[in-house]
Structure formats: C-alpha cells, structure tokens
Length: 215
Ligand SMILES: C[S@@+](CC[C@H](N)C(=O)[O-])C[C@H]1O[C@@H](n2cnc3c(N)ncnc32)[C@H](O)[C@@H]1O
Image 1 (cartoon, rainbow, N blue to C red):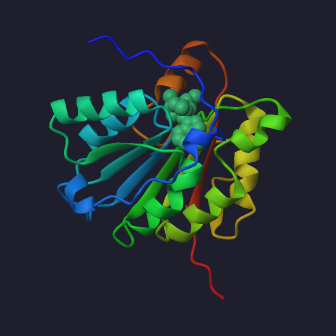
Image 2: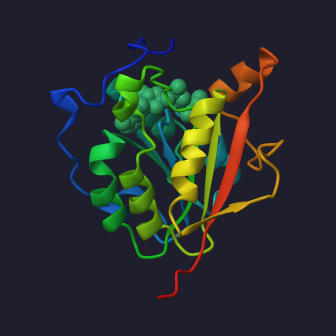
C-alpha cells in the first residue's frame, strides 16, 4: 500500500482545528490501560511509535497528530499488526491536551516526546508552534514525578526555544550538563531524525525530568 499523500503543513490556528477532542475510554483503547504511557506529540506517519510499541510491550503509546489522513493510516497499520499497546489520535494538541491528560489513569503518563516539530520560522507565526507555555504547564501537571520529556530538532533556534519553555517551568529539570545531548536515549529514531542524520546535519536534543515540587 503506498503512503497516503497529505499537505505538508496545516495551520493549527485555523477555525477547523479549534474544537477539543472528547476524552477517550482508555479501557477500550489499550489491552493493559494501566501500563506506563509514552505520549508522542506530532506523530506524523507514526512509524517511530510503531517500532517503539513492538519493542516495549510493557508500555502503552499514544501519538497525537493534526493531519487526520496520517492518523487513519497509522491506526490501520497498528490494527493490521494486532498491536494493542498503540493508538493514534487526530487532534490539535494545543486544544486537546488537557482534556486527554486529565482522563488518563493516574500516574500513567511517564514519557513524552516532541521531535522535529514544525518550526514556523516567521515570528508572526510563532503562535503556531507546538511548544507553548500552556502545553508545558499541562505536561507538568500530568506527567508522573520521575517521568521524562525528550525534545529534539534540527533547527537550533527552535530547540533553544523549546528548552527555554521547559526550563522556565519549575517542575522540569534538565538532565545532562552538556549543552545538547549527543545521542538519542531512545532505541528508535524518527523519520525526520533519520533524514537529518543522512544529510549529515546536526540535531539539538534535550531531556527533562519531572521533579517533585514542594510548597
Ligand atoms: C515535522 S513533523 C515531525 C514528525 C515526527 N515527529 C518526526 O520526527 O519525524 C511535525 C508533525 O507535527 C504535526 N503537528 C503540527 N502541529 C500540531 C498540532 N498543533 N497538534 C498535533 N500535531 C501537530 C504535523 O502535522 C507534523 O506531522
């Protein structure tokens, strides 16, 4: 089956992407809904999560993606392969994250990845970028203590902006004293990561851990 063709970018501020999703019935989504959950934001064709789900069968995986045809295709592949720890959801993450996270079984969200998000280079388009302070604070509220957020990009200015947004939230502590992590700590590379490596271009990576906040 040839991959579905889609527009390269959609504007997340467009009217049609402003409706939040309804929360899901996790008991129907996963065969083991209380396993730790890895959330991948901007999952595109979903191959990264598909390979993660095959390797880490004692985790659940959720991909959020704004381009619906990619989600339909990825869920089809997931069900063809009989994977019961993987699901993709069509949504605008900046409108739907709180609803989704607040409905999860408590303590299950333990890993988040935001990898090569769309850069929206023009400053007047900055509000279209995924990593906004509100998204960081929603993750801070629902990620389990000790849970991690992994960020990577091939655009240094965007990687810096993402890192600053997380650093400014007291719930997150940057792991590793190096400016950028030299290697990906995960066992699977994303499609964009593979393409960037093949071009010999640099990748800017940061890992944060969620810490306990004492009043
Ligand atoms: C450049 S791609 C990177 C895909 C993948 N993470 C990788 O590393 O290969 C960024 C993805 O984020 C999706 N995206 C952008 N804004 C989004 C939003 N507000 N909500 C959900 N997905 C979004 C895009 O449609 C696109 O598939």
